Image 1 (cartoon, one colour):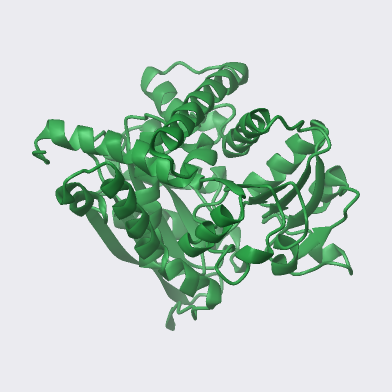
Image 2 (image 1 turned 90 degrees about the vertical axis):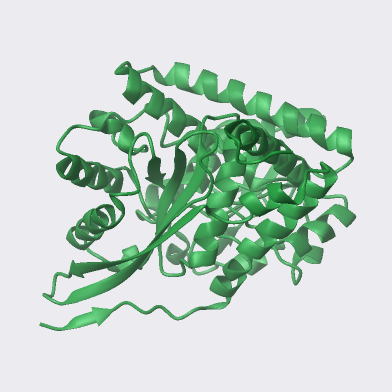
Length: 429
């Protein structure tokens, strides 16, 4: 029997991600300075309080054992247990996971949830793995991190290339380890195992509600608005469906292999029916374009809903839209945002726009703790209320300090973390 280590070479996208922690820290420092917080605030939240690297041996279908690299970052637990997804992706890096955990802390602050941020990841390509291999990898990850996670410590959830089934395997493994049923250990579960109605679509609906508020602010009608969505996985596909049903014109979508564009509007129902389980559909068309070309097509609203760093200093001056809504985590670099600001393009940041997922994960956790489950209408109503309140607070902060929405969202998030930390005695300002 041979043992093989999974070693995925870095590509350009990975290198962009390696800058994500630095960019998080730079923007954090800017927001801390605006608020005149002492330097100890920045020092406390510039990186995770805990970071775990694990090796996960998995027996593959061919009998070989492969060793997978995994990570879990717990950014700050001043407000409560940490919360954050687990992504399966070949380009996962420690720096990316640490930045994502920090963004999640700010996201929980912006939405006023009793959580700190966390994030997990495994370096793998789930598109090349069987269901059996994915199950063994999922269970192995839980065994590796089981001492640090739990319903009152750190609560995982789905992320890129993970889903309700993977959450179910992880829940089952945790229950075996702890020897009792603990549905609050993980969110994004199937409804039959204590999942929440509305969780699968929550991030997309949060982005939709955010876009509706921006349209109202800009006195734009959503109907006939030209929208490009870069990313056609869980978030992008549901968002495309909702926009299509509301009469918006979705003129472009992108997936991992390329993009599709039609200035007259795409046939979204057809694309949804023909995409695979990873959201890939462009391979069915001979006239597909690159994701880079897609991002530079003219539109009213551009929604990056895939990976980080896709809008950067080399293409920000070629973006042809009025509004950018960040449905992905960290899709716009700091340098790119400065260019977009100078060009008068409004950007709604990820820690506000895509927070619907963690909001409904919180609802799921509450339902698990209560043993009482809500209707989908109740979930949607409470999600919309939370998104509207969060957007209003960030917009008011932007006006108060004369900053863009990203800095305003950072200010909102930092204030909540700093106050909780001060009350615990971690800070003495």
